Image 1 (cartoon, rainbow, N blue to C red):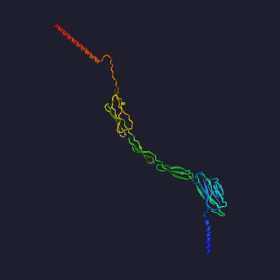
Image 2: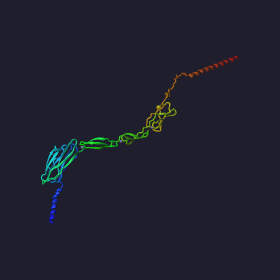
Image 3: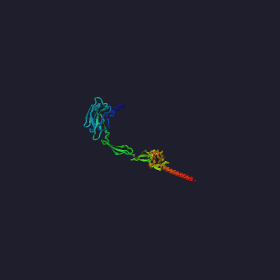
Image 4: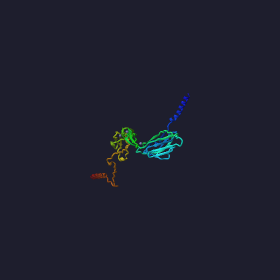
Length: 359
Ligand SMILES: [Zn+2]
Ligand SMILES: [Zn+2]
Ligand SMILES: [Zn+2]
């Protein structure tokens, strides 16, 4: 029984001594302030050690391609827990020879530093890695510490785009882009608006009613919103006199729309002697439809000037002298008659005297 107990105790002791072997081994990590960059960008790189590593000494190397990144020497390049930094800018390596001051390392940020992204023949970005040279604990025992790396890529902000297929009003177009880093991509171009260049008449306009037309796309034939066509208005012929005006009756004239046949009539005023046509006010046009078109009032043409010339005939008579031709003839007849009467009376008187003497 004693033998069994001591054996069990030995197993427990062995198990306890083995447990640390299963604890997580310390590790480095590398992070950057920006992972998508363009030439000229400055990024901050941070190398961290996992917590409670128990290390008292650690040496590691951060490496990068000197054609891809340029080390920037600034005051906060060195982190808190390690002491020495050896930068070899020409080959892109930073050696950290860190020795803790007696105590074990608490872990955390080992260091941070800045790199400027270079233009590497059109390409930008690259890999930044940290690998451990040596690590030991308080007993100077070797400790395995895993390294890490991160990749910085091009942000493709220098893409050059070229149109491969032009968009239409029914199909999207296509652009092909190529970055200085060699990356290429395609992207769609939005459809363009319809080109309404021709219009289809849905309902033609008449003299008095508006019509309707609709625009059509010259590319795909799509129709847009309907729009109105203004009414054309009547297109009348010249006035045609149907009945001439006389002194007693008014005349009639009419005209006809060449498009729809609409007829308007107008009266021609009676001819009045002594009144010039300009004095005559035309009566209102009697029409089946009113028109906005201006039509001058046509007045009858006057054929003879004499109708409107009235000369008063005047006869000048000298005062006191009767020179009327008719009047002088009557006077001569009266004188002759009077003379004949006197001769007759004288002859009868002579005859009467001769008869009395014979007795
Ligand atoms: Zn790129
Ligand atoms: Zn179209
Ligand atoms: Zn008409």
